[in-house]
Image (cartoon, rainbow, N blue to C red; front, side, top):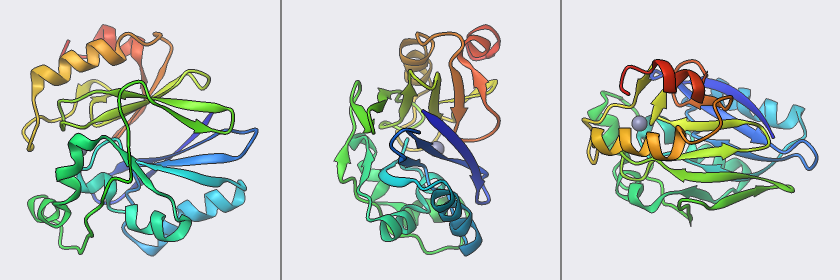
Length: 212
Ligand SMILES: [Zn+2]
């Protein structure tokens, strides 16, 4: 499994394209594009690498991670997958934008396919495994690739930090517990691709993350 990071919008959200090399089947995770040039960077990459977009996945439904959902759906006709416990956030996109001080029009997003802990999302003959990691938001998930030795952690786990827990539905105790149970049990050499900032590894965070 291959992965490519893009960084979009005023919140520097990491958007990921994940794909199976043999089949060219791809998933777009947390589309944060806000401009035509952002959109073009993403679509050029998909086209240049001859990828077929099979999945649109949101690690959670904060507006900065879902602002480009509409464009992906319109362009590729891809249904959206996320955990149902973040459904209420998907129905409050404009309110979230106001709360974050964003002067933009953003459409609500509706979950078409619910993802739960242990689900496998197929890309060709390979897959991503869904890990529920609530606490930053109630429906936060991580996406683990055993073959690629990486995990996309959304805003649950960052390099040297964890997600904020002061937003609706946040809970710090739940977040640290879910990271310990679902992420720190992965192999130490697993690369962590977070929703913001640089990548890290599970082993490094287990040793040095100040929240544990
Ligand atoms: Zn978030």
